[in-house]
Amino acid sequence: MATWLRCPSCERDLVSSGSAAWSLSCSAGHAYDANKRGYLALVDRSRGITGDTREILERREAFLRTGHYSPIAGLLDELVPQATAASILDSGCGTGYYLESLLRSRPAWDALALDVSADAVAMAVRSRRAVGVVTDVWRPLPVRSYRADVVLCVFAPRNAEEFARVLTAEGVLVVVTPAEGHLRQLREEGTLIGIQPDKVARLDATLGGRFELVERRSLDYTVGLGDAEVRSLAGMGPSGHHGTPEPRDDRRGASVDVTVAVDASVYRPRTASG
Ligand SMILES: C[S@@+](CC[C@H](N)C(=O)[O-])C[C@H]1O[C@@H](n2cnc3c(N)ncnc32)[C@H](O)[C@@H]1O
Ligand SMILES: [Zn+2]
Image (cartoon, rainbow, N blue to C red; front, side, top):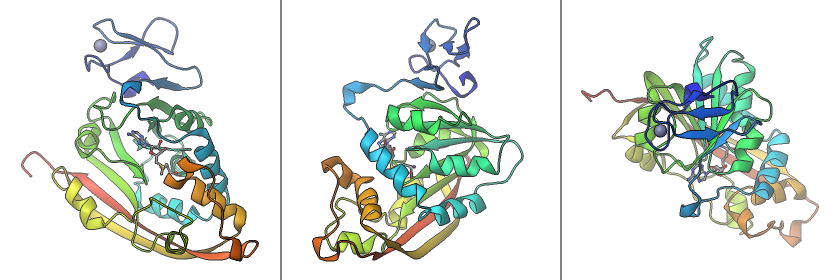
């Protein structure tokens, strides 16, 4: 784990100190204890950002288990390089579903799962395929510069400056964002609140100072969802912070067709010369 991290106080590299692999310190003497489950919690609670709660994560896990989003994982598998050995940082990892799926066909890869929610990081490192760090993506990341060959960011906040700093010069940033029609039917009927499609033009504008777009692929398909799936899907997003949203009474028990529409964008860091 230490090979990924730099000291949040002074930015020197962290190393494992002494015999305990979970004891980390920098050369200035700042020391941190990682969790034996495989992650280091560094979040600054003073900003009040907690990220996804355990309930939201459980609903997300239940929904992802249905396989309705497996085409998104399949698209990521095509877009992320297939090098035998490389390193990947999943920012806003949530339950770790997409990271886990990429690592299945990249068994030698070195992976770091990052999220502001400790419950999310704990879930993402369960399989022991990745190590984790709990931190706020809007702060300078406690990750070494030029450390990741791939930064993955699926439906999660993006810090262009920090993503560019932690990527190698040849690295790629792979971003998944909801497109115009995403979950349209559930938004129109009011079951989902707060999810706004991310316009790719806006994405390009926020990343554009640091990154250039190399490839963009779109997915648009329809899934038939039962009540329990609608509940999990609605409760795994922003609506989930207000309890479990209920499917509409007038179609209780019937399945509803819902559009899944996402854009996956691959960016490269701009070189200093532009
Ligand atoms: C919509 S979820 C997506 C999770 C996962 N990538 C997926 O697609 O299944 C957004 C994630 O970003 C995390 N998040 C929100 N604000 C964050 C922040 N400021 N720093 C780091 N992570 C954050 C949440 O805790 C949550 O796990
Ligand atoms: Zn330090």
